[in-house]
Length: 324
Image (cartoon, rainbow, N blue to C red):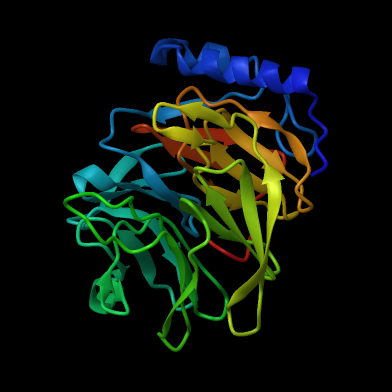
């Protein structure tokens, strides 16, 4: 796969990201002012602003039309809102461990939930319902991320878990599609740990982050929403062996208006062209888990993870025709 980063530059980025992960909260603003830019994406010297930390988990960021942002606090069973001014308030309580969010064309706020594992509409109150909680009689294990298409369908991942005494027969790691007609399809079980999921702006390509793999994967999308043509789309910096096995830390995904793919990973936010060519890395003080463009012009990138929320002013804007 073509890659414009040399081994030396990759190593330098990795060291910078590791160093940034060790700074204290009070030093974050100073450290962030030294960041290197990516032409057309983010300016040199931009500031990674810490909005707030200390949350009980941070996940699932998604833009609202008024320029604010929602994000989830799974361990606290909350969905929070950040105003354009950076003020944080509670949007929903008692959310059954909601992890990630998506808006459908009809305005429903849909979530994957890990308390009682399921896909559900959680807002507005008069439309709350469970959409799916099992496939072929077997309950989901831990749904992780989702994206809604313009047809009214929803793609989502369930990384599952290796067999254990307490879970001798877990469902396989899977990518699912809930069709506009509310039929649940299992699209693939060939990814070792499917995590973040995203659509290209033209919705012809489905991207899936494989946390235990070295590549973000891509699939062609058929007229019926099914997928084919699996391929290694983008090679990730920072793939390494840990005590529990190999990992890239690949997590949440976002696309910008030009079709670039942004990936939350161990070393920060990795940015790729629509052809999978690496453009660079935006280091984040704490390892990121998910991200989303927001603001009235969608030129603010919000990054969440490890109980913290950050935002970054961008040169590029997020894809305007989808909340995330």
